Image (tube, rainbow, N blue to C red; front, side, top):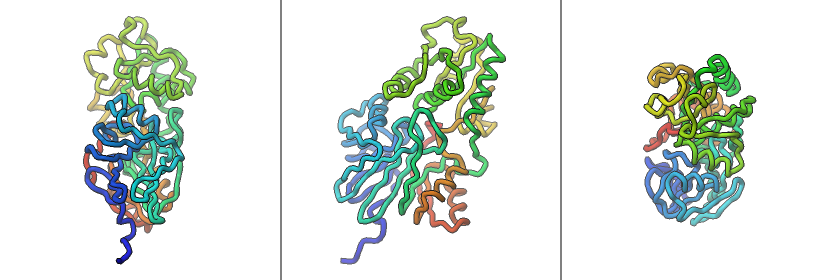
Length: 336
């Protein structure tokens, strides 16, 4: 029999990365028998799988969000598990949100990494991204355009706190996604020396408590519903982006609307949401971090997905790196 073609065991399909010998799928957008999940955001994780392999933190998040306790198989960072068909899978920190992991797949002497979503900036709520050599590097490209360069988060926190100090009779209402961004904003405020109570929309409570249960210190958190408008003056309030201009916000003392997202680099997006204080805070790698990561990993080939593939594909071509864009479906920017 002729030898199998290189990397024929790993096949990108529109609904996920198929690990053929193991009959497993990485971040499938439909229910499968065996899912390898990089993190808990809804564009990568879902219920209905027969077996779900992920870090303990991601499994806890999935249980909270999608009730997926049955079939859960935990894998610690750095741990390697043997899948059917002689495939080894190792979960490596991705630095995206609590529990997020790159998945290193090894078979027949070949190494493939699926990054899921990742960032390279320090984050007090999760371990940092770990560069790992491989043969094929399957990378996200959410902010894969040169215009996207994220500022230091300390600068964005300073903007928020300066606005708060300038308007002690108001509050600053920060729209941030409930998984990852909200907890990071709170933790970064604490790191910046802001130790006053932070008020939460009710939809934020369970995920913040889950983070605390996994060792992330968020300081004193209060539910908006438990306090009067006067109590909230001069404080930071965190809510889902959908609540920024909702009737719910009328119970707050003249809120200054802010939003924490990498998309706040685009002024039109801030205007569309009526955001007064755009905070460019992303849990994804920016353009410089994407290209630096590709350089540092040094793979034979780069597969690009989940975002602005064309510009990153062109950069790879101009720098003499083999690359291809993948056509994946069901991947949104829920987390940024």
